[in-house]
Image (cartoon, rainbow, N blue to C red; front, side):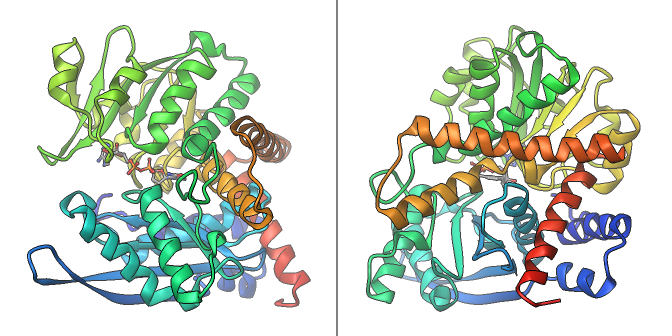
Length: 428
Ligand code: NAD
């Protein structure tokens, strides 16, 4: 994200805008525009070379009126307390819009996990839990994976918490590996969820999915499954994806005139979402600048990488053909760009609705952990589809009824639910 765009400023500005529209009591607004609790802690790690490296970890619990705080842990070099605050706040709205009984939280460590050995990663994960375990738990705050963290890391973290608390506690963390307390369908949940909402938007706009073309930013967990979903569930074409090249330290856009072969590209992509460009070039793919995905002549844009990617400058480069922006990533669009999209009548599926599939299946994972009984992949995905379609319908109804932008409508639905829970608990 550009240093000029502060994610937490953006999250507060979006919230303030809708608080105004709703005529929200300023005292309630003040309680919601800041996190309830914030933790910053040191994690010293004995590295493979014998030296000690000091990392810093964060955990922010934005609001837990509707249930335990919930949200991922991000390992990324540009992680800051403000990005974690913003992401925690967006989680509060996400769990509310998906109507699951959880609040909002987020965690992180500023680190590039690609630079660590497996042993160092395990020590960092266990160290993160050692510092914060008294303030997380199945009834307090339940972390999950996010950018740079994996199911295996969640397995180590769950194990560390279980050791410290003295009992096997799978419900402390979600996104665990299947067979280690994880849920079937969790890996594809966010990307497929994005596509369920795109499908509903296309119905609303009378667009034929089989005739539609998408450009996607990122090629990690969210974007890979959004790409599979777009091509295999909807029958559309993916013109290009972009990714961060770990060797060259720059982003690239990878395209193919006939559309990309998603399964092939996945087969040549590493665990960090970096595509093997030499192999792609050899079989006829074109390699362009990392920003080019946004300029493509397509019907659907899916930003699925990082915050602030559609901003005052890049929004001007979007083709007139684009009808839908589906926010797979968290916070990919700045408020300035939102105004341009709204003026151009682009249909926006806002992040905390569009990418709520991950947290919804994380919630299903917690339910299965509590029952100690596990559902089939089909059951999980069917329940996910029902939840997201209902959430989408609720937001669309308000947006159409009140004539407000989809992001504002989503905020209105979510804020009303959180405020209701705060009132019912006697906080207001
Ligand atoms: P990931 O680490 O698996 O993948 C990130 C991808 O983005 C990689 O392909 C990487 O190469 C690419 N990337 C990084 N910087 C880039 C740049 N400047 N230009 C182009 N590509 C770039 O992460 P993910 O889990 O797929 O998460 C992506 C986004 O979705 C994040 O905003 C995350 O918070 C959000 N999200 C993730 C989930 C989930 O379940 N994983 C759920 C909800 C929201």
